[in-house]
Amino acid sequence: MIAIPNNSSPYLEGFFKGLKPDTRLTVSEWADQTRVLTAKSAKEAGRWRTSRTPYLKEIMDCLSPSSPVQQVVFMKGAQVGGTECGNNWLGYVIDHTPGPMMYVLPTLDLAKRTSRQRIAPMIEEMPNLRDKVKDPRSRDSGNTVLSKEFPNGVLVFAGANSAAGLRSMPVRFLFLDEIDAYDDDVEGEGSPVNLAIKRTATFSRNRKILMVSTPNIAETSKIEPAYENSDKRLYNVPCNACGHFQPIVWAQIRFDDNDPATTRFECVKCEHKHFEKDKPRLLSNGKWIAEGEKSNKVAGFHLNSLYSPNGWYSWQNAVEDFLEAKKKPVEFKDWTNTVLGETWVEKGETVEHALLYQRREHYPAEVPWWVEILTIGCDVQDDRIEFEVTGWGADEESWSIDYVRLYGDLSRPEIWNALGEMFHRTYTRQDGIRMNVAQICMDSGGHYTDEVYAFCRKFGADWVIPIKGASQAGKPIATYPKTKNKKGVYLTLIGTDTAKELIYQRYRILEPGAGYCHWPIKECFDEDYFKQATAEEKLKKFKLGVPYFTWDAKNRRNEALDCRVYSLAAVRILQQHRGINLERLASSRPSPDAPVEEDEQEEAQKVKQPARRSSRSAYLQR
Image (cartoon, rainbow, N blue to C red; front, side, top):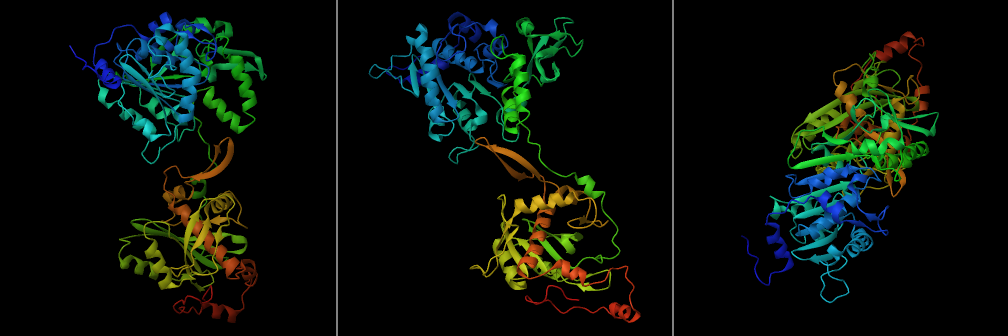
């Protein structure tokens, strides 16, 4: 027998009480016997009836002491009773299995509002709870907005945006509500979900954790990965005609000619039509079926709003909202989250890498005739340097010439010296002219900024330009400074979003000409190169309901795309700050098909090695 010390605090009393064996009354049984829904906080005031929402019974009973489940994950749509399910458990703990409990909401303000508007009325309406939680007007009652003490236990409200509240005390019972609205990081201390769960470590053998949320964006959702790590239960209902069990999913909700009045749920097996009046029978005969690997510790439940009881949210309501939402992306995202109970997958604007790979061509020479200048875009990684040599013609038609990966220790001078020699290499054009690289843009935003600056100064501060990306819509592709910075270099800001937008537009051009991109059939331009060159997607996201666009590689390698961005920046610097006119250069040379006089042909064949490039030499040496 466990003896509780005299004069112990409610926290210690709750701790020792939590070690005692619990009785066998389940949460759903307690709710049916005791719970009263108030008109202030519930859709239907009066006695709680689990039969109204039979799918909640198994969820609640997994939170009962008799169940071995320690963690319940409930990914849901709106209007299915998820919040009241959690409140039933909260009342059950106060009345039946007292112990330390924490209720976490997205913000501290929301926690205070929930305490006042939902929990306080529930306690006041139910005598068995009201007698245990003292009147807040009494002196030293222990009943405040953020803390409600009761015999052998305490309920603490916390906001996921307050690290101090999340680490305040050890708890046996943890209710995490609407976790997809939590911040990813709270005050630099990490995930608020993880911080809160650590509070239950003391009660690792008999703790209970409830995670509830309507899902949000797939990439940032917290409830979806938690559900995926559970046994993934879906509520299956039997067809009234053939008895086949199946979940109620949107794919089986049918309607004719965009008319919501014709809405019905069709059996996936026999196509029997079920209407709203059939829903109570379907729900009462349903059962949860686990689709994932069975777990005794983590139970996951997924429920959409199509299960909402009669009088709450009908199938016809879902169709009406769908027809309205599909016209507006913001509303369609909300409909997907709140009605289907599914995460919103951002479908980015991108280009298939295979289509570009198939466009490779045989060049008639190392550098085709139409190339007027060469640039290099250089990306600096921790263990290597990658760069692409690009040729540019009239109207910024481009020809990729070479792609190099140079591995080595970037803290040593050897790799930088080797890089300098590669940059000074010449390339032979179709007409026999030897061409130097006219401009280089080199990434300086990594761990070797000082080494990049030193390299630029050594090989020509106005030839090798250090760049720094600025991901901001509408920013110029290259903002070249008028003067050197304190490090003696022309640090140039690159509008990466603007550059990628333009590059992807040019990827889609199908006929040679202005803006068209050429690639040679060459080993360095393999399938991996094109995967990197198209790695990023243009995504539409929403902040406070306002849409904005961002480019996201989704953890895919994208060095080839970065090199192309920097090479584009280099040609823009040449045109905007060096006075280079690609169209004029192109018009000054004859077409490769034009007849060439014999003496001109002999002169063209006299190829001379160019002198070593000085930092302020002409953009092109022939």
